[in-house]
Image 1 (cartoon, rainbow, N blue to C red):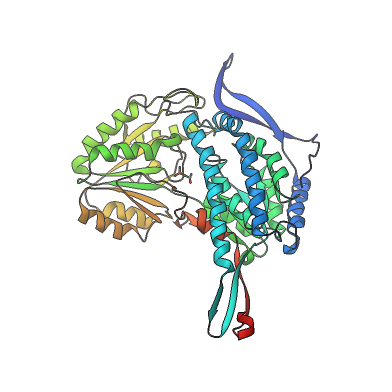
Image 2 (tube, rainbow, N blue to C red):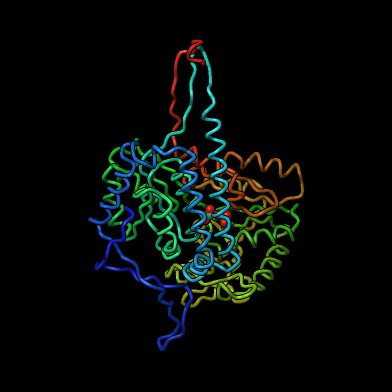
Length: 487
Ligand code: G3H
């Protein structure tokens, strides 16, 4: 609620994936600690958001579009002042390379500016009168209430802001649960939220999710759940709400995107794009390619070239030059990935590249695993790490079958130079996933394009334009179309 509250309670220590050498071997470096708030404080934070919304009568939901834009512009100005520090925190806290951390920051500023422009367009559209069947109406965009925004560690700034910023600018008040990894990245922004927006408009909280989020959802005071993470957690959260049919959910969830490399592919293009798609930010992206289907005729050439390219990737620390593979923030990740690779090896697959799967305290060197089949964990689990499972196939129906049976449906990438084959594959996949990529990797951007998924992959749509609609409702002011009303 715009106040700094002294804290004497429990804290959580935040460690970097970057390790230091100690007497006891490699250890993750301690970066700092933050208050671990309890249920009582969490409920106070919730009440601050409810009070600031005030049934739609609060200062923020009643502010003009122009006023809200001015506040947002001030926030962007204050955010840019912290650019260097935030980029540094992204590198230290989640291990993202300097290039990618810089991109994440700049992409977020662009996203906010594009959102401001999109709101101006939406507002122009809303102020036009429409007439049909003797009724004249103005269709306004109105906020929904209190939005609980929670997001992942892989884009702690950018992806969380793809829900938080549109929700905020549409006049909702925000309850922002800071991510487990990437929490310090937001530290420089807390005072910017306070300075730019009316008191209580954006409230942040950090603590054990299972403890503090449960009573918040059970209170029934959250109107919109904006969550990016696993479908299991999202479903659990929704169920806690006493009137779940009144809860709007904007969710971006599970994925395990496939690439299909047919015998008609340009192998070099497929290798370059599959490498990028599988290993950017160590494979920790929901849009990462997580299963590469390759037609048997070209499987040997493809896997050899892919393994060579992977071996040439430089591991190192986020700020070092040309580094592509960096340490992983999740402490259990190296052992979990090793388990997945061991499982595949025990069932007949091999790691093709030198050092593939090598792990230490926080590093995992990427592994190309071949041939993977449906008996293996790597075929089914998203694994969110630098492992590339390659599945040989004979008939093109096999990868289609995979997608038909999958519980998720985010993206696929098709690699083929045969237009007829590409066209048939587009037809097969377009109703199974929400984006089909041709001869290129899977990805979320450009941010003006709709971003969603089918089955357990998403609910609602994000993008610069769609998100403004997702976090608002159309309210009509209607009258009979008499001559005096028209005037
Ligand atoms: O983790 C999921 C992100 O939405 C991926 O975004 O494709 O821009 O890396 P990206």
